[in-house]
Structure formats: structure tokens, C-alpha cells
Length: 465
Image (tube, rainbow, N blue to C red; front, side):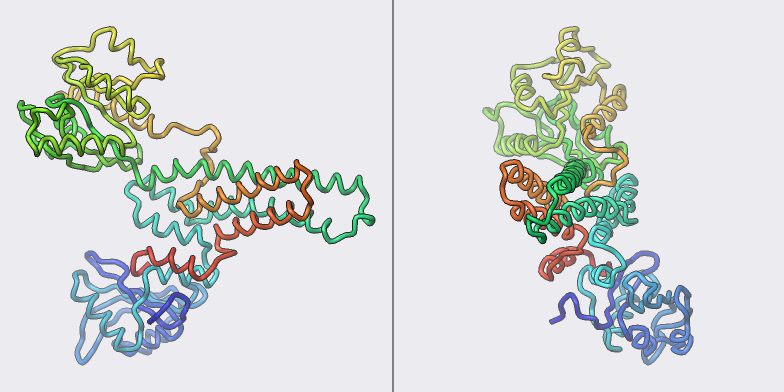
């Protein structure tokens, strides 16, 4: 059984569409490809970053292809490699892969091409992880943020923190190496002050990075917006209006929607999962199907990042509405729907004005005419992207939970070091914590790593990446 870390030549399908792409890499991979290529000499003589035209052949021609040649070390993996562009569809790529196996290439493990790029020093772990972020991006904003990490912007920020910690560690360990009677007290005080300042700078940088994670994951993973409210408040009409298509059935009969349905939109680069739910009301008198739908709607509201609570303007706020709004006020936008028929009274506008931070934000709209929909979209974006003043907009930001966990661990170690230093613990205790924090930073970029951690991380990648 193959494992990450062996260096045999590998192959996998990397893309499928109008054209399919089969990727190979590893020492001897081009020679094995030449066995099933119609122009072996042209292939083997081709310099890096060139394309060779020919046919994949068995006993007869199989498919006409273009082979992009990459020579070590100037390739994605750092090895000799090639991308074989075949015709689209399932059969061509599948047949090419079968012939490559017969020629001696092994099936690539998930993420093995990127794993080899990391092991060969082409990219660090932050850039490796950004490959899958890029593949899974649902919006242009998310794509651009992933590309920023792929280009090395996050690695640069991590290395700046590492340099600060390295300065602190080197000073503390230097003084641990010298006998106390050989150290000038004034010089020691100056050096240790400098060490403390470098470590505190590193801690502030770590805290800002950790705080950036929420913003970055919002653009990668998106948010769940749940449309909730009483039956016949216009939730399904609003759902259809936001999606700009008829997905939910709309009738005048309350309780038409028995279960929640989902659609996807993007607002200002944020992927938004939009859920239309069954009307919220007392389950007494409801049939079994509607009762289950109401219960599921309540559960979904608990999971939501934001709730679009829809009220029928003709009916106004009920006691049941008020109870729901009080419970969820921190993540609710109150939608006064059917404004084309009835505007909200003054007390509603006053109580739910933006200045009243203890109440949900009010948006007046008509799902039927579209009036107020742009204001709703702007309000959703504003609530989801409340900016942490601690996070600099110019920061690249963390892209994965692994990076966030390690960043927080390093910050905790530094805070512990400061606490022990302030309580006059021995210098070797502080030095040990600083060194552990430095190693933790190394885990983010992959300077410090174990085989088990790497295998777990790369096994989540797609084949061919």
C-alpha cells in the first residue's frame, strides 16, 4: 500500500470538462509516458515549459493529446512532470490513466502533487492549504483571498512573527548559557527589555491574525441566512425574489411550506446559503407534517448566522413574533413585508431604528414588487461583515482552522511566559515557553511538522491536486 512520502512516478486526473487533464509527476515519469506516446523522442527531448503534440497509443491510437512538459526543479512539484490534455468526457481520461498504469505509473494519493511540492520546498504549508481554498471558492472575493495566500502573503506575515520570537528566544538562551557572574547587570537589563518587547510585538501580531480568521472563513465558507416568520408572512415570495427564480411554492394558503428548502446567492463576495422555512406558530392544531416542519425551522434558526424574520405588514407584530425577536435579537433583521399594502406604524420604525442596538434592524420591503430588496441585501452584508477594529484590512488573514488553532496556541504560550516572568519564575522556564511558541509558529508554515499531521492534512485534498 502506497503512503505519502514515497517518490515513485504518479498519475491522476486533474480536471474534466470540454478537455480533460491527466497529470503525472516523479522521477522517470516522462520516460514511462513515452512508452504510450506516438512521438517518444520528441517527448523526451522536449525542454521544460514546452508543449508536444501527439497521440496516446496502445495497439492502436487512443486519443490525440497535447502534453505540457515541466522539468525539475522548475515545476509545481519540483520533479519532472507533465499535464496531458485529452478530449473531454469520461472515456478518454479513463483510458489514458489505464495505459499509464500499465506503463508503470502509480495512482496518485489525494493531494499528493501538492504534498510533493511542499516536501520539495516549492511551497510552505499555508500555500499548500490555499490550493484547496482556491478550488472550493464560491465567489470572486473568496478566490482572490485564496490566491493572496497562495502567493505567499500569509507565509510572509507568519515569518515576521517568527523573526520576532527568534529574537526573543536567542536573547534568553544566550543569558542561560553564561554564568551569572559574567553578565553585566545593566547590559542584561537592556537585553531582556529588548527580548520582552520583541515577544510582546509577536503576541500582538498573533492576536490580530487569530481575529482575522472569522473574516476570511466568511468569504470561503459563507453564511447561513434563514428566512423565518409566521405562516403567510411572504417568506417564500422573498426567497424567490432573492434567488430571482421560482423555487418555493407561493399560495394564499398558510402553511404551504412544510419543510425548509435551500438556495445559494452571493452578496458582496460572500457566499450565502438561503433557507426558506415552514411558518413558525404553535404546533397545536397542525398536522404531523407541518408540526415536523415547524420544529425543523426552529432548529435551523438556532444554527443560522443571520435570521431574516418576516412579518406580514397587514397583520403586524404578534406576541409570538416578539418572543422570537427577543430570543434571537443579536442576529435578526426584522422585515416588514407587504409594504406596498401597508407601511409600518411609527412605533415600529422608532423601536427598531438602527440607533436602538438592543433591537433587530428594521427593513421595510415588498417581496412582491421588489421594493426594499437592495436595502435588505446591504443590511445582511453589513451585519455579516462587522469589522473588528483590531484586524487590519491589509492583513492576508488565516485561511484554515488548523492555522487558527496553532496561532491561538502560540499566543497562549507567550501569555503564559509573560505571566511567569512577571511572577519572577526562573528564566529557563520563560525560555522554554518562548521556544515552544516558536516551534508552534513553525508548524503553521511546515518548518516543524510530523508525518501523521501531513498525511491527515493532504488526504483531504482532491485527486490530481
